[in-house]
Image (cartoon, rainbow over the protein chains, first blue to last red):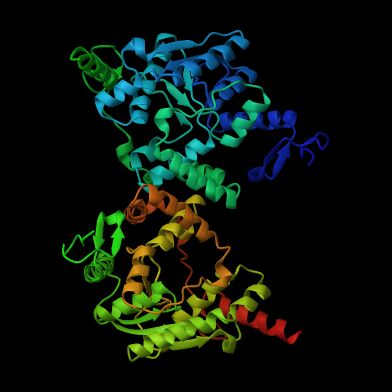
Length: 307
Length: 307
């Protein structure tokens, strides 16, 4: 099959949801345009932004960094070492090697050095690994952005991630989370940085193909903590539907973004109007005297002492 | 495993979504209560109603008729012979045999005699079989109810049916269909009878178990026209999620019924405020001079003549 865009070179990527198939070069054009359209639709990024790109070593985040650099944005990469034996070390290597190839050096936060590695944090706080990991990561996204004057934090969530999350939120009619689900979370007056998901229009197949064809060397293993994640079940269910009806996933998420403008769609509880103070320990924005991250860290410290 | 209700008899039905397992007698009690709760929640039926139960010969509709009789409602069964070779004949036999066992005789509408058997109607109108079948059935539900003074039409849609339909409507953000999805569709001023789905709280596993344990002889084959139905894909996707997280399907549909009370949730387009007139051919309520069913029938008649 020939590429449907140039009509010359054999197609390398088949995209039933777009009724298209592209050769590598035309696929890169298609991919960049999709990212640009996604950015433009919700004004995710401005040319003078300083973008902190959160990179895990997996395909989505490295592809995000890659394409944002190609589009000419000013970016730096942030790698958070979760302290997961083996997996974290292999991921960090990939991030450092990728950055070096572009003449960059990632900012690295080491959760072991910070006293909050995820496996211990989850065990001691008796919470799900993915939940604790989310809390800790968000904390450092904001902290590093504030310390180093980044104007925006970008994460590599793709269409499959967002559609799966939407399905989960709808299955549970979770008004709070539905209210917060969007490619753009604006900065808040109390100091939380703007957060954006520029890959929201790109499927996992598309980000993987881009990474592969660009020769980006990413970690292919899944995080060992996420094997039981419910999001994987939602992804599997949506894949089943996508296979039978290509394009459904994309219509589902785009349709939601139009539908959610209806103000009453979203339970008001999504908004927290209390003015936030600052954490007495670390100075981060916080609704409580000590922020969630500092309380978690203190809990871990005490548990370690008692050993 | 013993029955979780009586603690004596061995359990015959295991229901992970209810954290329960029942012996046959206790399951019947559970099942009837679920139906009664479902009826009460939305005032689907009143004691003085004359209920037209639409029976296809499958498990759900025969179980519905059975349990409504047990609960003391005044019911008659309506069987619509769709004119599908083999399948329709076998279904009709089951309905007649079931009714005879209860000293009843179903009302039968024969679509071949009416000039609108589904396979020909779908082919000639170039529409999907399931869509045409829905139009034709709704027409006769209303017509028979009006002719014979029934106050309400009851169909056997179960929780799996409704959850799958909801998922489909959400995947496409179909405001019209979301607005009309409810166990109760009230009667309209222009002559459409009230329609209810008393089994909306019961899963397919539960209706099948009830039918089996009650010794109801139903058609087990699926309608041959429905093999490609998209609803089957949605059902499969939800089953995958239900297996991993029992109870999700029920919370999904119940949550929707609470959420949909938010008036702006539903696109206003769901409501058609034009006053309906009556069909010039058959006298049924209709927004057009000739109703959809009569136009379909005329199309089939002409196509047959031209042969």
